[in-house]
Image (cartoon, rainbow, N blue to C red; front, top):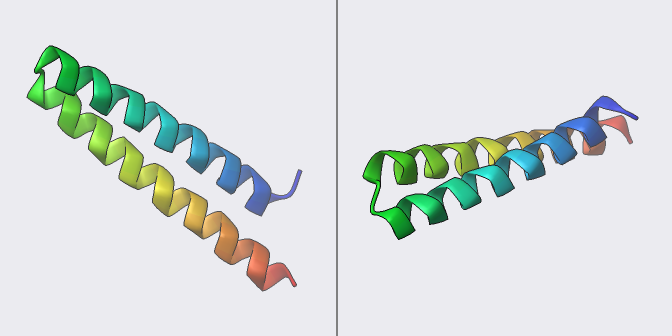
Length: 59
C-alpha cells in the first residue's frame, strides 16, 4: 500500500473517531470530550487531504 493511500485511510479513520467522540461529548454534555472530538476530526481531515495531495504528486 502506498504512503498516500495509507494517509488517506488513516485520516478517514481519525475523522470518524473524532466524529464519534464529538457526538458522545454532545450527548453526555461533556464539553471537553466534544472539543477533543472536533480536534481529532479536523486532524483526520488534514491527514486525508495530505494523502490526496501526495497521490496527485505521484502522477
